[in-house]
Every structure is written in structure tokens, then in C-alpha cells.
Image 1 (cartoon, rainbow, N blue to C red):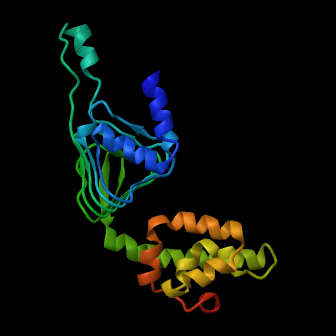
Image 2: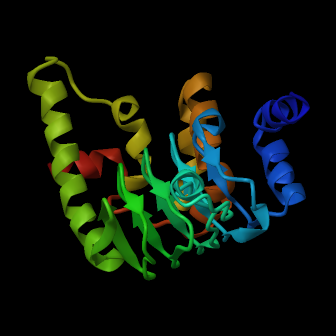
Image 3: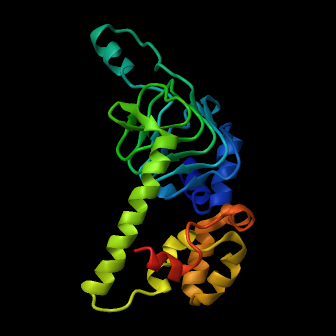
Length: 234
């Protein structure tokens, strides 16, 4: 009961949970984010077997296991009280998980990796790729997916723009595209853009940017020179 209460207290904030995992023995890097800590299922029976790099994002309903449960069957069939099989889980730097991903024991995930929705990671995943499936397998390089995403993203934005214009019968505004600001707001203009929004939107976007704010402000070059320029290309 005490352990349960300690865990519930730990997941009440990002900082507490980070300290909780470190105290347990998990090796965890910087800028590690959890979309929903309440739906997170971390196997902490062997916490020292878990290693997480920098800039890792865990989405809702993520499960990580460092052991299996097959030995329960051995106890009945063979009368052999063999302990659980265990294995290390290592997650590299700049890794992002979609929703409902499960990572099994003995797995290493490289750097710059995206794991798709509902995937079961039962084997090692190399660096610089997108992997998906049950079991998860690389489907393309991250470079390929990046270029494909840029093209598809613009098609989606164009479709959304004309949906507002033709279906909702109104002129699209910057407010409609506030979450897509990176398309038309350079890093040196981000503060002006945030201040132009209402307080709620300003606060929410700042929270979403989290530790990426400085990187965005100092480095980001938008695809278009402002909202009007983006619309003109639709």
C-alpha cells in the first residue's frame, strides 16, 4: 500500500516521476517526457536494467517489460521453480513512441527512431529509422520519412484550408493554424506570434514547446515567410 501511494505521488508531476525513476535505479537522460504517466506501465522489478537516453517521448498506454512470466507454467508442468527470465532494455537518444506501444525485455532501440502506433518491440531496432508492427520492424529510414512527411503535411494543410473556406464558409485565419505555426513563423518571430494569441492559446503552446523553445527560437527557419505567404502557395 505504501509503495502504491509513493508511486501515485511520484506520477503527480514530471519532475517527481523523473526523480522517482532515478532513485529506483533507472538510467534516464535529459528531456524525457511522458504523455500520460497514469497509463504508463514500467516494469520496475529490475529498474537497473532500464536505460533511457535524452529527448525521449513516451505516448499514452506505453508498456516496458524487463522480465517474462512463462516460468509460471514450469512450476505446474515440471515442478521447477525457475525464476523469471530477465533482460535489459536500452532506449537511445531522440526516440518517440506512438500510442499503445509495448517494449519487451532484451531489446535495444537506437538513436533517432520513431515507433508506430500499437507496435510490439520484441527485437532490436537500429538507429535512424521508422519501425512499426507486431513485431516491430523498420519500414523506412528517418530521412525518407521526413521528406515524405513534408510533402504530405503541405497537402493536409491545403485540404484543411479549403475545408474551412468551402465547407465552413469563412475565411481561414492564423488562429486556425496556430498549431502549425512552424510552417510560417521563423524562430526570431516566435515571441511576437505567441503574444498575438489569446492567453489560453499562448500558455498551451508554450507548454507544448517545453524544452524546445530555445532551440526553436535560435534555429528554426520556416518554409514560408508568414501566414499570407503560406496561403498564397495553396
